[in-house]
Length: 230
Image 1 (cartoon, helix red, strand yellow):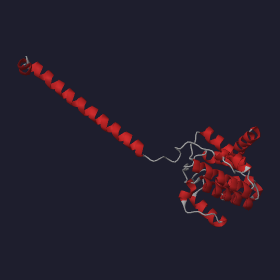
Image 2 (tube, helix red, strand yellow):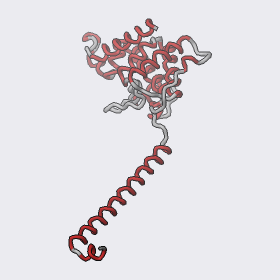
Image 3 (spheres, one colour):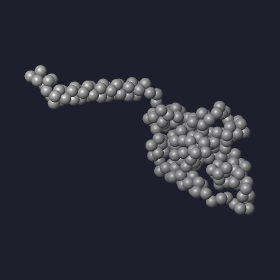
């Protein structure tokens, strides 16, 4: 029978096609096994990405102040609403940064969070088309100038990916603009559009109407409502 199959032209063709199919299937299965093994090893050895760690809030830690508890509560809720997952160290750094600027510059926690929401939607690694970085969307050259003027430790652009440092520098700059132009409304315009727009317009023309100011205050009111409801 075997001799017949191997000697018959059609049967020989059939056997050849069957052998080729078996060989091809074996190669595909072997490749699939290698790919699965590579993916498994890669996933086990891959370090955690910046926002991959589940949120852990320090709001229940002993020894925190009432302000830190309020900030922790608001920030934790904001991150959940925006689907952001920070590490515990990132969260604690942001809480420290927010409480620092609240005490130093007399901004409310709701206002601080409202500006962060407007600028970056709480994305630590946000980078704008013009190169503004982090939670408060600070341009590195502005960060360098502000840190030297306000005597804030700053080692370079990588610092802007640290939540606390970014918040500290961003709101130091906003406060600088407020002191320079006399109001928080003018400071918000300078923060968003650059101070040159105020210099060109002059006091007689008033502030330009930009959606940014409205967006910040709307976000601030939403956070204020959460404080009242908690």
